[in-house]
Image (cartoon, rainbow, N blue to C red; front, side, top):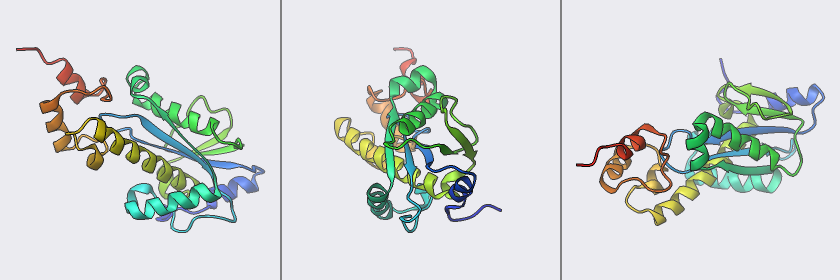
Length: 209
């Protein structure tokens, strides 16, 4: 039975195996119809673990914002993206891995072991790594990464909502809600929509009457 609250046990086990800098990596934004996929990598300090870390989806916006400040103050971190163009070219799976690899590469201290959320390790990672299913609910480092990635992407979608009003991205973050799909039909496809995703592709390929 999996733990209900993430802790430092995966990181501690890696330290006992001789690793010194353990990074947690997670991404957000695989499901939306628009915007980039965003990843974060975090190396937590064992003596400064933020209190109340959890899967970002289980936290209120206010709690996430408070945790972002704690993580950025006491951890080594990096946030990275893969663009809409890269998503459409590579597919969302490979683009999400690209964003993860970029986040790890951007850390000021390079990790010697990486905890990756999910069941696959990005092929381009050269360090020792392990995949942890539902890692954002089990590993403190992955939970911290999920929080940074979600907050960064949500903020970006609020900015994009100002540039492209009418789609409700400030509320739906680009996910295919009924309101977003209705707006897509009414207003058409924007430059930041993912053309390889079926609802967007179907509109673009709809025959002109």
